[in-house]
Length: 343
Ligand SMILES: [Zn+2]
Image 1 (cartoon, rainbow, N blue to C red):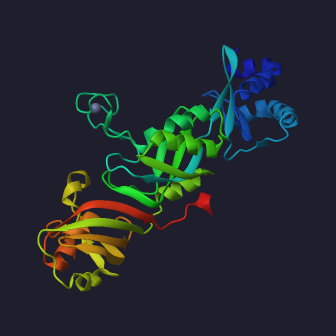
Image 2: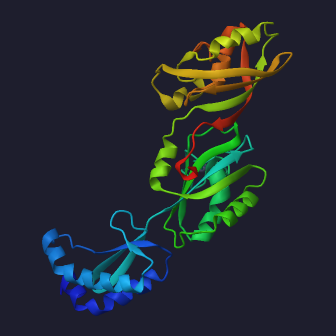
Image 3: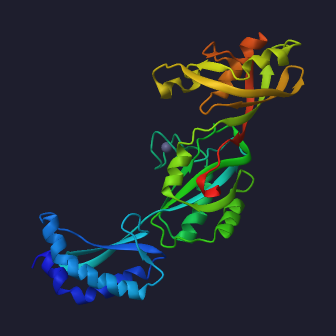
């Protein structure tokens, strides 16, 4: 007996199998499919099962008045397959939870940074942790999301990211946590937020968790918004008296930036990127030290805008001041973008 005949022969069982499978999950929308054997023509297959699908669908609509059939983006896709026996498989779409994170530590990344030697399995280089550094914010918060949803894995999608040694302050950076194969897709977000914050301790913080969509996750990843930073700058000698005046040239200035020497290995080919500085301001100056704020186009290398990176960024604070200087600490103060789930 082929698989098609097997399904038709066991048609009376199918509804019960689907209901049993569905009892393990939390969902509002679904779709039912019948797996098509490789050598079957699509039309022949649909012809054979059309009536059966209508029968099952009608019964389920009666049983589940609050659930909708969604062919485009179902939360669960039930698939009937036959091989010796008839089975029902459930394919769960991921849950997307949007929020903002603050990073108070200069030693952790936002998302998992796997060791490049062992790719996370653990080796000598990473001292068995599987990570270059961390644990990341993702690893600090994901256990709570997995526990509440009974999902299997998370992906952390930030609206850009800061350097590991930079803090993320202000209102935080929008992010989406994608949870794969969630059995329960409607966790109590206020409770989840509280647990995540207890888990993250003083290293990080999450705020304003909301359910998001895949589209909003994609938008967050590619938002390319302006950002504000605060930097601690150290000059090699006394900066000039008219420093503030000299730096005014940076307001609205288009910078030429070559790939920073610190990321050249990763970036490969040297390309000039033009980035705009929107505005800047000296917050405090004390001897050779300065606290400086800047708002710039997405992707501007701020450390290099300060030091000039051996002439690879033009102009720079070092060039305008006429005194070598470097960034000793950097904080991201604002991401000038409102994510879809907050609108
Ligand atoms: Zn390793």
